[in-house]
Amino acid sequence: MAKKQNDQAPAHSEDEISELFNQVTDVVAVQVQMGPESRQLIRDFLIGLDENLTVADVKSALEADWS
Image (cartoon, rainbow, N blue to C red):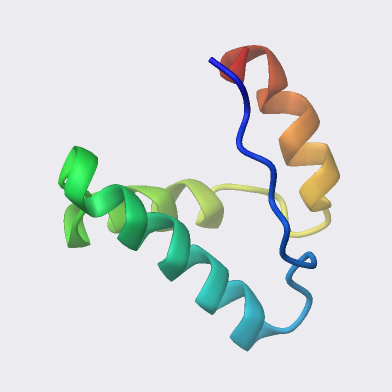
């Protein structure tokens, strides 16, 4: 399956991050019924990360899982 290209600029501010997260999960909601419980799981995952990690660090660590 080809990866979807993101034409949107990367999110920087808290508002942009929140908007991006909601856009991604709202689009998926119909396909996988992602709701408050799933978002809570993602929140729990993010809370469990060291605050000094960058997004690039997290993406790199998960890359094998996404392949």
